[in-house]
Length: 308
Image 1 (cartoon, rainbow, N blue to C red):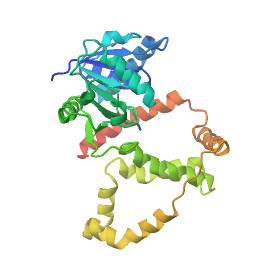
Image 2 (image 1 turned 120 degrees about the vertical axis):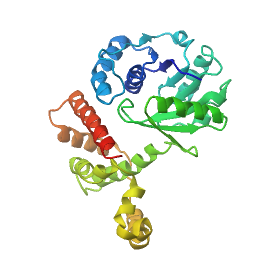
Image 3 (image 1 turned 45 degrees about the vertical axis):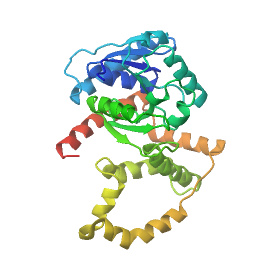
């Protein structure tokens, strides 16, 4: 199937980012978002994203293309593909699917951006569950290329193939997750790190700002280029990954045994928020996002240059 018209259901942060990417790749985009003022917000987001999309080579168009923005789901009747970005609540997701199935064609893929829910649960009450899967990005999806594809119990193999081809055409990096688990793949990895980062604050091991600096100036530098298995392969020297596992595997196991988990009490949440406030100082969230996005564009170019 050829996709020329994409429906983006949910025009929040993730939906606006997806819409920007799809527009840059030359598709017609219709965004459904009930929030008042959504059209102006989406237009502004696309305009701000466009220079980055051009810098990444995702579009040659100088002026940003604009999506149709509506609060009426019926405008999605003619779409070829749906990127769903509703709230991560299973009852809401199932209601969204029911509303979509009353409007779109029976062969239109519904790809959910859910960060934690499983496709089998989302499709449980669907009339055509075979066309539903998870397609979870990392924020912001117009700049971070990974997309996790996770099939549900009733998802047709052709649906995953079709979704993979679509995201490849969007110049994303689709990852097929072999087994459904809450949080999929990437979010489980980031959750493992975040759990320990929070625990370290709770235990007084380090401040929020120093923990963030340790990651950004340490392992994060390498993670931008390769994952943990390759990193430890290089850490094994001439003997590679096997030498690393044999020689330093016991130290990993010792650290695993010491990792902790602290409950997110109100006091701990206040401590974490205060730590972030101190870390960013007077810089606004908007300015911090702009700096991040510009750096992501530059990093993407650097990775291409060095074959990563």
